Structure formats: structure tokens, C-alpha cells
Length: 172
Image (cartoon, rainbow, N blue to C red; front, side, top):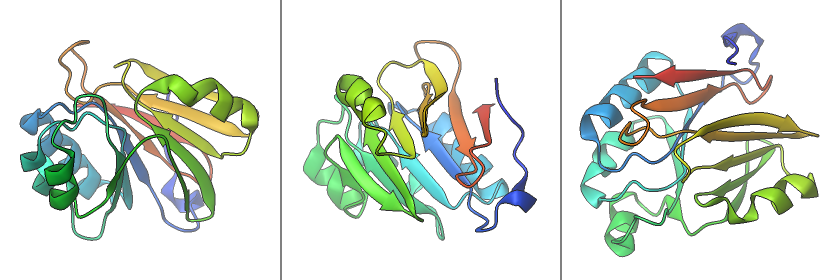
């Protein structure tokens, strides 16, 4: 179930892209970042398994804030940190962004406690390569599936209006 986004309702004009498990698939990364440009995405949240530092230039778009966490396949952490300009973090990672409390992780080890705490507006996770979008109390939980398309045959990400919690699953 995806909801069409209404940008007029978004008073801060923010649209977030939640993406995970890109696994160096440059053609798919390029397609998703082209969507980000076309849709005027303001933030990209990457939930791990970027894999190689050489893909950083594809993700770092002018005027778009990038926030990410390391995944279990991100081995070259120092070079990834350098190429991503220190915008990748060990997980789990807690951040307040635009007045929203967000909990980011790759592997869903802390998923249940993060949801049950009801401390967060959003909990984003990856690793499973399966889409999971649900509202639990005040918390919207999102796993955007895999952006690489290697395991499921579907390369997906989620575009979210944080003000309204309207979202859209996009596939390239």
C-alpha cells in the first residue's frame, strides 16, 4: 500500500528518500538519484550495505542532505567515511532532523525495542531486502526493501513526506 504524495500539504517542502541495500549497483543508484532530482528530494537516508566507497559521488547530490548508517557488507569503513564526508554512522544511530526523532539501523536487532519505546517519529531499517511499512503507535516504521534488486528482482525505495507521513514506494 502506498499513498500518493501531496507536496502542497508539506509546509516545509521536505521529501525524504529512504533507501537501503544498494550493494554497488551503479545503474540502479543512478536511477534512484535521478528520481531524487526530479522529485526535489531534500534528504536521502541510506540504511546500509552501500559496499564500496566509489559509489559515493552518485549519492551525494548538491542541495540534498545525506544521512546513512553502515551495514554488515560495508567493509571499508574508513574510506567510506572519507568519500561520504563523514555522513555515515555506526548503527544504530539516533538523530533529530527537522524536528523529528529518527532511529536508523541496518540490521533490525533493536527494531522491537525502538518501536516499543515510542520515542521516535520514524524507525528506518534495512538488511532484510523486504519492504516493511507500518504505523505502530506514534512511530512510522519503514524498511524500503532493496535498491539493488539482486535478491527480490525489485529495486525499491520509499519517498516520504515527513509532515503528513504520506509515502510512496518507488521501483526502478
